[in-house]
Image (cartoon, rainbow, N blue to C red; front, side, top):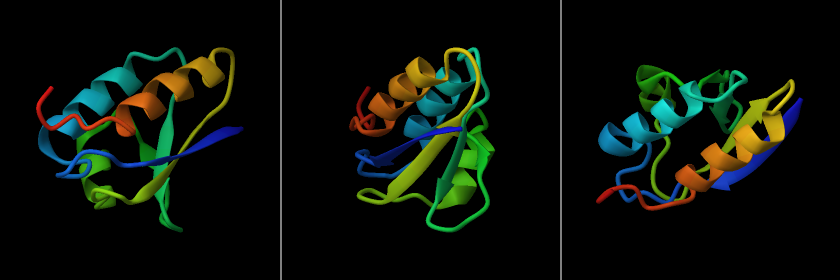
Length: 89
C-alpha cells in the first residue's frame, strides 16, 4: 500500500467546500483512497462526511493511502489538492 503524508493547507481545514472538492477528486480516481489523521481509523477520502469527521484543521498532517494500478498518480493528485488552499476555489 502506498502512502502520502500531506499538510492541510485550507484555512478551514477539510470542512465545507475544501472537503467537497477533495472528496470529488478522490471519488473520481481509479483506486479507493483512504485518509487518516494521527492514529485514527482511516476513512474513504471520496466521502465528504468521512473527511469532515476526521477533524483535520489547517496545518494538520494527514496520511493518504491507496493500492492498485494507478495508486501513485491518484495519491499525487489528491495530495496536491489537500496541500492547496481551497477556501476560495
